[in-house]
Image (tube, rainbow, N blue to C red):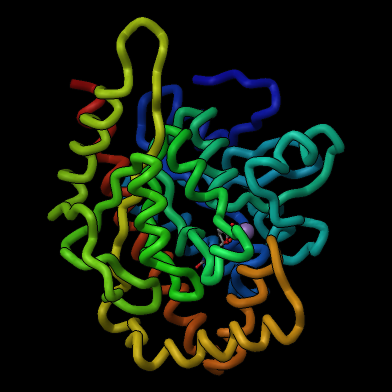
Length: 315
Ligand code: PSU
Ligand code: MN
């Protein structure tokens, strides 16, 4: 177990890591900046329970008072969901948040980095960041993508939202050498919708197959002489059919949220939180119901992948 002096583990996560039981990492920006209170805290608790029910320890990751938490207490989870002093922090922000003793909610990128440090190999989220529409001008490409090329973590997500340019996001991941595979489908999913307009670069039929790919990937990164080239894997998991909002229905709402954002002059790291909140408003809360369903579904799959991977690791 990694004894990095900046990391604090909950007893549950510490015990799991010490005894080789599987662990699933969970991000915290989705709680603080991705959903309204109190549904955010309730969802975070349900997601942790979903993971536990499969015999896997949940590690929700955030920075509290400069300490990097690998697993949160009940009180910390409540604080994360309700206290506006939790800034959205990506990988670049981690050192500053730690050194100045601040509170931070970790994005997919920074959660991956912490999971990597802690030796947690599987991570569940809702949707990952990607190449933003108009990135040819703005150069707005999420650090989630570059982190996928570095940290040794499998991210389970429902694909990327069409607030992003899905085609360019897939191109970028190809350039970075990140395996992108969809569970049980040949088509890459678009978060609220099971189908995007893009074929998935790879697919797998089961969590066990996904775990086998992780093992092969990481075996191929290690020359056995200490120079490891890790990097992650993106496992896309389509939203459950009963919760999906079809692409032609959500598409116009996303376009109108993007227009509102432009009119307000919002850019940079505020883009994603603004759009998520605005789409919930425009859909009268329907998108939030879909979001909660897909996060829980991703947590269930991540737990299965983590369990299968830890079985392979022991062989
Ligand atoms: N996409 C979603 N829901 C989210 C996010 C993205 O569908 O909650 C959050 C995640 O924390 C992700 C971050 O890591 O937004 C990406 O932000 P940016 O585009 O600024 O990199
Ligand atoms: Mn950005």
